Structures are given as C-alpha cells and as structure tokens.
Amino acid sequence: FAYATRIMVRELLNHQRLRRARKRGGDWVRVTLTSAKEAEPGLAVDIERMPEILEELRQLDARKADVVQLKVFWGMTVPEIAETLEVSASTVDREWRFAQRWLARELRHKVDTV
Image (cartoon, rainbow, N blue to C red):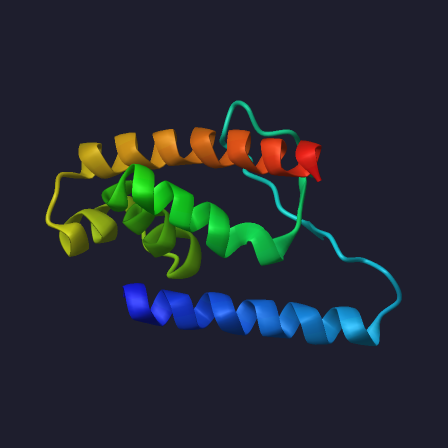
C-alpha cells in the first residue's frame, strides 16, 4: 500500500500540473477536512506540498500516516483499515481523529506561511 500510495500521489501531482497548465491561474486546490474541528471550510492547500506534509506525519507517527493514506487515497473504512493494519477499530478511529486535527493544523500553518 505504501508504494502504491506514493505512485498515486505522484500521479495526482502530475495530473494537477497538467490541468493547471491548461487553465488560467489556479495554483491552489481546495481541500476540506470536514470532520476536523480545527479545519476551516474551503481551506486552500498547495497540493504539491502534500507529500512533504505526509512525510512529516510519518516521522511523527508511522501508523497515523498509514491510516491517513489508507483512508484518503484508498478509501478504506475504519474496519478495513483495522484489518489491514492488524489493530482494533477503536485504535484506527483514534489515530484518524488525531491525524485529521494534525493535518488541519499543518495545512493551515503551511498556507499561512506561504
């Protein structure tokens, strides 16, 4: 999953670059983390920074990064992630809630500093 996720992220970035090249302006992509309490609706994020932000999360806690990748890029449910990572569903739920808040804060910080 980790290797395939890296490939997916790379392809998403390539797709975004091509799309941007065809359209006028728009170097920002709207991303919302709707269930994160700290997220702002319509938070603008430079998608090219996502691999860097995910790597920061991986260095903080590898399992949280795995949960994010399986949930966001693979669309897995909490029970599916729990089975894949061989942990309980409550652990996955707790890791996901933390990761959402952390990502919302980091994405907001990255946008504010740009």
